[in-house]
Length: 319
Image 1 (cartoon, rainbow, N blue to C red):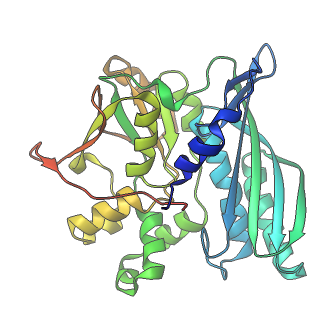
Image 2 (cartoon, rainbow, N blue to C red):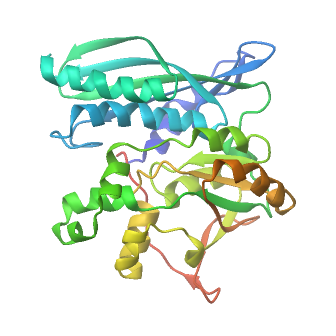
């Protein structure tokens, strides 16, 4: 019987947290939260990207490096923090000069942009895989957790959903290629972590998560952690323009389940909504209310008439 990534974590690793009082949040969120000083918490997370699983083997090595670091920075952003340091474990079939030079260039581009320092790592020979541990900081007591949503909260997502998922699905289904724009391809290979938005969220958001495996999956993780449910209005979801050329079922499947968006999904009270909008004006980056948190369980999807829609969708599955 197959198990999901989270089943495996729960079964084998969730009980390994020690009684160390510096561990504010261990396994089960976008990043661990560690108490390191009177002013800051340390945030740390690790992700592995594998050839022909998370990227195609012929992907530009500069894009592989960029995405590998970007998705880790996104985890820190979802916690309301600032990424500062990274370590890199790089496994590759051979140490080719041209490949490594391009990889280092892509890594340097995003590291300099977000002021992340590479402070160590490892290189080994084998099938191509990139593992990055990211470390960052957040002001003491201001980290955003998945498990703090409250019944009645509004659910927001940033940006638009589905463009990267469409670009990926088009590599599997040739009929979709006509809908893929350069913007879709760019968002697949070079996602932009919502760092400045994350920093603003720690002033008003109850809970947040980055959308890496698809909204249906990642909102589900937030709800499970908070032991609550949600109602989501499908016509409120900010689909990328390219998806509007597809029928509803295709649109919903790609935008909700394909993943690779790296936008933020967050919750806040209705009373905080106006203040949030004021604080986000300077960012000039869209956020959209798509529903509300309920005291039930699971996600109820609603159409434009407010009627329930049965969606048999799963986000990206690691196993």
